[in-house]
Length: 301
Image 1: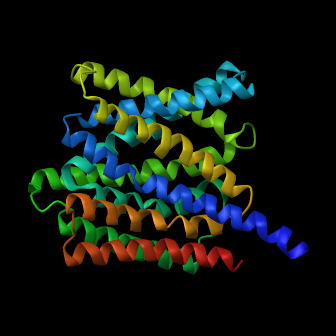
Image 2: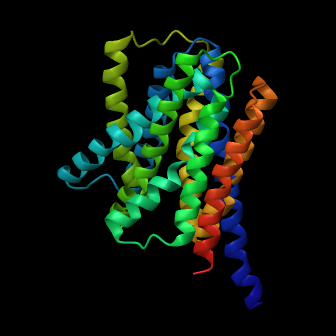
């Protein structure tokens, strides 16, 4: 009986992180669908952010978590301008310019940034394993960049702009690690993401409002798809992720979540025919390998 009781949380946690990876994996596919039906990249980013913020805001409102100091709200919103506003915008342009598969892979340069942040901010030792892993990831990123993207028709200039925005998404994603780690000692995850998304939504609205008119004349199928990126790929995914971390170790969660890039590239290949050149696939494999090395090294500690 004891074994069954101890195994249940681990099984539930594994199922939660698998569900998280599946939900995240649909983001590139749904975003491409919205853009293919006339929604500009900035609009995709803004509406995803707004739908996600609304879901987290209602979550906090119903659970009585909205009352925090105004100064803390300001800090969280300011980070949201970078960690959400810039992140979502760059992700959408990377998808448009060089493909969803390219965006997925370049985001997985994040472990290199995380290792650097951990060393500078938390004094974590840069072990030989971490150094090797970062070197492999850097080599993989170079291969992916040289491939020109997962869209064969991408223009040379557009490809390099898309690669640049993709690398920025990796930096934005990685910066969540030290920021969220510190604030989780003060507030639940729902509170952090509510106000981060509020800052991101505001930033995206300002940029969108002054770059092109904010349109609402999209068909219902596009609205439903866009709402799914906020409600499913953002809100529900992070709820499942939080539930997983209460039941399994962070390292186990990281390793299991490696299902995401594999599934993401599978979806865009099946539905949109995106495919890397051989050097691009080799680079993708190197980046994923580097993340697995970091995760397995941590598991042995």
